[in-house]
Image (tube, rainbow, N blue to C red; front, side, top):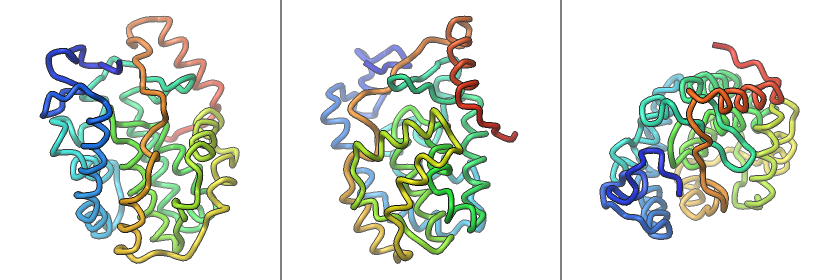
Length: 242
């Protein structure tokens, strides 16, 4: 059980307001909140001149504030010492999530770069993994807004969950090599108006995670955990600018 707060029995999954422990119910509630708050989140992003990390956090807050008391707060605040993994993927250090997301936003707000490298942008958001839950839906909305500004859309309804997640996992492990770019560029289409995108997004399934849960890989005061993280970073071989 993914329990970074170590109080699942008393507070439920990730301290949700309902104290709910059944993950199948949790996921239904999350998806219902996503659908209900999606129009507000999309409108919020469209109003921003330049997208920043704070906007990224705000989208998460809009989507999930009705269920999680920590909505809109990143892992630097919620789990600053924890190394979080999904399978063999090790996500960024909690204090480095902002660097990964900012890099994605820098690339994504250059229209030519976004048009050519949408997968690299998505991979940076995914590696940053700022939140304990809800990363996939949050980054999907921000990514869709960047696509709109660059003059195209991605037909997510035509993608296959397993193929996308495999490409995303490989992109995180080997960023900047075009792995996720090649997958997503197959599904490029004309830009969508907000109403059409909202209708599409509310029906998407499975883009917020995989069948495997996040795991606590240990704490960063453990030299073994630090060494594993540093090794994963070396294997990635990707420079993220501060």
